[in-house]
Length: 491
Image 1 (cartoon, rainbow, N blue to C red):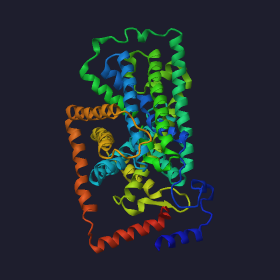
Image 2 (image 1 turned 90 degrees about the vertical axis):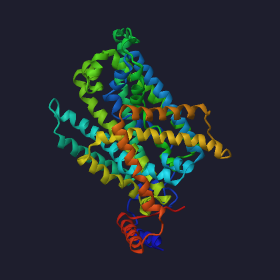
Image 3 (image 1 turned 90 degrees about the horizontal axis):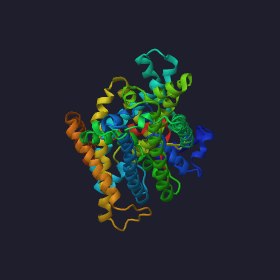
């Protein structure tokens, strides 16, 4: 058959190609191996949660919470709520042992149509925009030391951003093992960056620099109406705890590794975020923090002088780690969706030598580059922020639903029911808050998601396609298969 012909062709002409990376699959089969260990799982979660946010702008929480003490309480509460969500996903990841994250769980609980709408919104808007925004932060901060104290030309930022995105795509295309190793290195580098902030900050605190903590719970500026917005900012900062669930099939011993990696990661991230904010307040007053464009850089300038030039480099590495972790996880969602028949067949194929899901990695590249150079990224993210929480809420609702509809499903890791209930209510409250605070952007985001319904019926529901269209699709799949040197995974 065609698969054997392609395999023979490639192996006959390039028997040694990529031999150094053959470790990505040990048994000789073409497929995705179980290469995600506990350390690599932790690095995926921490590496994607800790992006540029904690270094640049903790001021959203301070602004809406109204006082230093309340802002720290919000950081802790958001960490606990995110842990609730992460534990809910840990249960789903151990009882539904398929990769794909949100998409797979919605498919299992609520069927293919709802899963396709989630996939459609991810593919055309959320993921390319999210990737482009992280990449822009990378481009801005990697060039900062070169242009200080001048402004960086916008075209230079976009070129550096384009190089960053391309290198992440290349890395993920070449080797699962090296992608995971570099993710571990980047995770340690961003934890080192946070350590560079926390240690001097706590030293200042023990020296008695506590004036910014006096009257920390001053209630005159605290408004209840602002608290939901403070939580919204906090939950956004913690977003990313769900990415390990996108690669469940590649996790070694998922029943143990997934819950353990999630719990360890959330404990580390929550501690880092809270202590980093404490460190900021030892050097900066609330007023200074609110006026700073990049809080970590201001902090470093006050405490470290010339050494502060390394902070933008660490922020850039942090953004690169987020891009790498996101792409590694998201490519698996497109891979699984193709396997389920909801995306072109070629996306569920594996490179014959590299053993990476090459087409699924590359699918985001054109959309991300397009949005980087022509799109209004930040307004698009506003449209989509409510959709993210809506669908995460739907996933956790699916967990509760499956408890009653499939009580006999094996659950090696089971959380108390109040945990998914509290988290689900939090998600839907944030969706309601979006409708109330920004009805226009929320409405546009909702309209974009509704375009998934006709797309589902056009592409998949009506299975009797015209013969000429089916021939064209087959030819497209076959051409890409030859160009990319990919074949279906062997079971």
